[in-house]
Image (tube, rainbow, N blue to C red; front, top):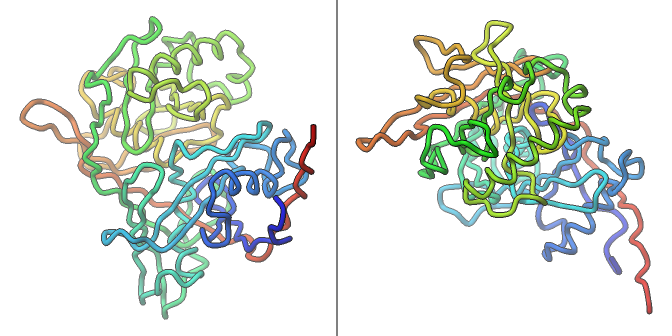
Length: 362
């Protein structure tokens, strides 16, 4: 990209069980095409190793958060999530990322978009990908962000300061198809959207146990073909159109819990199998489990009291609080969703993008 500065201010952060590059919107090109071209060079894509950039050769570590002050009176900052392709020159804004969301509040404070408040700071975040809102609350003793703490989240070594993320009700239908169950490509599923369009499928319906490793599932060509068929058809039913080149909806295989949780999951994002589970994906799974007659009936073990559900995944679990209520016409809605994550700043400085390819001439 001719004339773009050699280096760009960047913060690399772990948010939840993902890792990504955080930028102020003003530090990137305003034109989306130019911005995406720059981010591909920053992350080292397309290259399955991402050896010449910040990416970690996996969708969970090839993520970008773009943050700016918000003009919305109900929000302090705007957050745009971008999924950068690993081995393809693609940048997608078709989904949110609830894990990187954990780092948005602390990043906004550090960059001066929001003032820290003692003893804790709450940052109202508008997620530009969907227009939904979230509130992130984290310790700020003495007006400074706590960088250490005793909160442990499954799938991340060590402990950190807690970031409580609460999602106000969006008003959007929890069941995009209006049905607790649909038959998609010959398989019974529940299509749910509690922040992330997700298709819930009993693993046994696809001749899987639901306890396989991500590598085993990815290596099964028959399963891969079936999941692709289901995803394409479900995308249309959910009003998402042709999803062949998008990252939503996600697909989550469900099996009975093994370690005291509510359910065991294996989630596809959408082709690679997640080594854990995304925050918003887990929010959709948890809400879907509470829908009467859904795909989780008969295999999920829901607590008799309380809102917290433990969602088991390949490397541990995620605890999420979800309440589902029904309106007078029997339509379900998620009236509360909250989760605790941690975030850690890895570096703050200047990233030097791979040089742009020279323009070709006929």
